[in-house]
Structures are given as C-alpha cells and as structure tokens.
Length: 116
Image 1: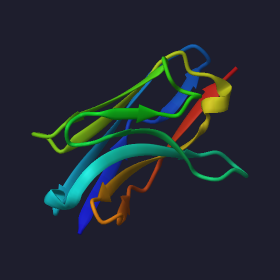
Image 2 (image 1 turned 180 degrees about the vertical axis):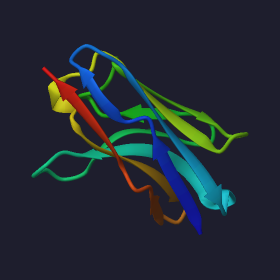
Image 3 (image 1 turned 120 degrees about the horizontal axis):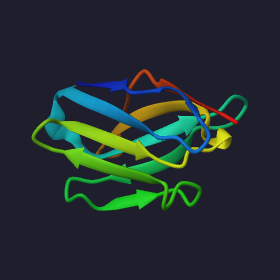
C-alpha cells in the first residue's frame, strides 16, 4: 500500500501563487509516475501535471507556462508550484501515484480557491 498526503492548498487572489506538496509513504517502490489532478464542482477530475522517476514531465494545456511539477525521490515528495493563478484554477487538487501496471493511489485532496 501507498499513502499520499497533500498539503499547501488555500485561498489566494488571482495572479497569486501557491505551492502544493505531496508526501508518499509505504510501498514507494511500487510508484513510477506521480502527478496532480484536480476536480472543480460539477466537473470531472482532470490531469494537471505528471512526472515520472526520470523526471520527465507532462502538463495540461491549461496550466503550461504557469505550473511546474517537481519531484524529490530522496524525500518521496512531489510538488506543484502554481503561479499566475486564475479563478478557473479553483478546484480540489489530488495527488496521484501510479504503478507500472496502471494501479492508482490517491491522496485525500486539498482545496485551492482563487478569488477574482
């Protein structure tokens, strides 16, 4: 089993920044990709950014150039630096850990609210 614990959400004005952290524990060796997803009210959960063990990254078009995902394998932690935040970034952000066989672990989620 893998446990994922997010932190760093909150309320920020448009144009501001937040940094999310996700600490992984347990059977870390199972995890290849780590990423962030978000779910706004009434919408489906969507991919924000993902990073693999070799630190290759992929981003949703809506956050490219504003968000940066990073990973510290020694600390088993993944980060999401969010700059130039917009009201449409408001959502619950979930940390995800995916195994090579496609099994997904999820954190409990952290609320990010961007006011206009």
